[in-house]
Structures are given as C-alpha cells and as structure tokens.
Amino acid sequence: MTDNIEKDIRNMLAIKHDIIKILIENETDNKISHEETENFIFFINAILNKNKSKNSIEGRIRGLQSVIKECYYDKFKKVNDIYTKNN
Image (cartoon, rainbow, N blue to C red):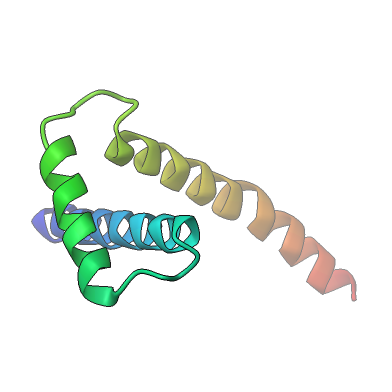
C-alpha cells in the first residue's frame, strides 16, 4: 500500500513538473533557459504549496488522471479489444 502511495506521489510530481515546464516554455516561445524553467517550477510549487482545494494543480491533475484511467480501462480497452478481434 505504501509503495502505491509513494508511486502516486512521484507520478504526481513528475506530471506537475512536466505540465508547468511545457506551459512556461510555450508561454515564452522556448526562450527560457533550463535553469530559469527549473527555478520557476520551484517558485510556483512554493507559492501553491498550501493550496489543498480541489481546484489546486494537484487536484486537477488527480481528476484528469482518474478520467484517463477510467476511459482507458473501462472504455477504450474494451472497444479496442473488440475492434482488434474483428480485424
């Protein structure tokens, strides 16, 4: 159980890092250095650290993860299995 919690936390941090990195690079037309990107990610994490609402970045990512898991396992896999068996 603890391994799953740790994995979820690591995944959440990696996803959050990648989302912020992509968004800030897009916003600056990739004219931001790697060091400045990492500093900004640290900065945004420090500012938003105490936000525990469902509208926090973490809450939104969790919601998106849930939708993706549900759609993949409950819907896509079933349809894809049927489709690939028929071809």
